[in-house]
Image (cartoon, rainbow, N blue to C red):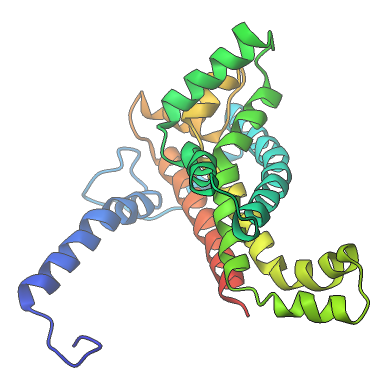
Length: 261
């Protein structure tokens, strides 16, 4: 039944179910085959095991890629969150003629394909700036990619913020800095933390920009891409399952923080 009391047509319900099946069935099968004892990852199922998860710890390249991903995300997350928070304050509270244009430019990295953005960053970093590609240049590229997500998360919190609280604190003698520190930031902190969680998740999954900016090193998405070239193995299924669980957990926490009042 719809919320207005009208019955949803059967064809619409069937289409809705079909869309969800199309979106989530591949993910469900990947998780299912990560427990399959057979190394082929196909039906029929010969048994269930956690052997493929145990094998992940023995993959030296995987462990290195994992720590590289954590390092890049650990650098990009605080930097992008701080920049995104400052941009969100400007977009929400400032008033100027070119504000729609600046809003579009800040959010542009979200809509530009990752491969094109990575190639553009490569041109800027190497021929123009003369930088040597490394894990640090990859972190800089991730800041460019993830900052718009932080802007949106913090701006969402600021749009629902009651600015009369700032005025009340100022009337009581608080300086602008004390208002920001003791009133504004604590009230929007769930949005900032949610922004950091979203940035961390996006950075962990970014492939296109990483491919062009990291040089000879690799991250988890690059490791998975290299493994898939030779066929999807149960080890890849196990790794993908762990990444999905981690991403869903982080995004769930971010969603709860954004909903917190």
